[in-house]
Image 1: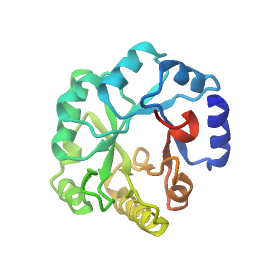
Image 2 (image 1 turned 180 degrees about the vertical axis):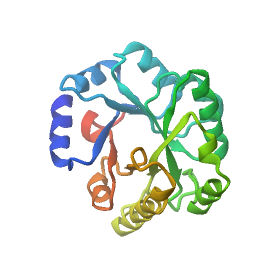
Image 3 (image 1 turned 135 degrees about the vertical axis):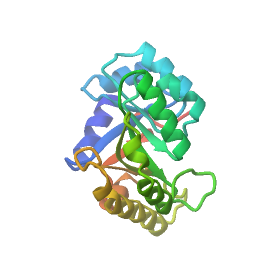
Image 4 (image 1 turned 45 degrees about the vertical axis):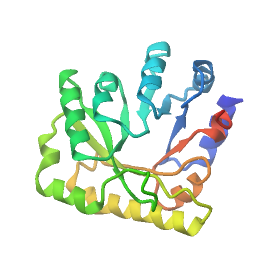
Length: 218
């Protein structure tokens, strides 16, 4: 069922949109089932669970850290993480760069923007990013690839509000393209199980889907 859920979902996605299967709280066997048709991109939101699954599962998996990442935990995922979605501060960026350097690799990162009205969500403002660009920070960070932007919309049934927030994130992405390597800077990560189609219509190129693949979380 899980592999067919992924296949059915991918058929609905445009060619330019990538799918991250959100496997948080799901057992290893479910991830193996999801991999059976060749899907390799999986997202976790807790560092310890991500590390445990990395150690237990095939090394072909491309692991996405999609949750809030504390600086003191970067070192645990730095050797293997494929993409960190929630980069939300200058200090976190510097720590990722430091840990990536230790492992002689470049870590792919998305700049997380605070597009929601909830204070519980994290992220930069566009002005903060433009200040960091002017300070030449991103050229200093030799072990970080800035691959695009990420945002989480307000948890609400108001579709128009969600749409406004998605459009805002896409506008930030477009305003930053000229400041980064456009061969790498090409991801707009927004949209989850309940709103990924709306997100795609607003410019998303990467959706993070869990319950529509694995079923509701316990």
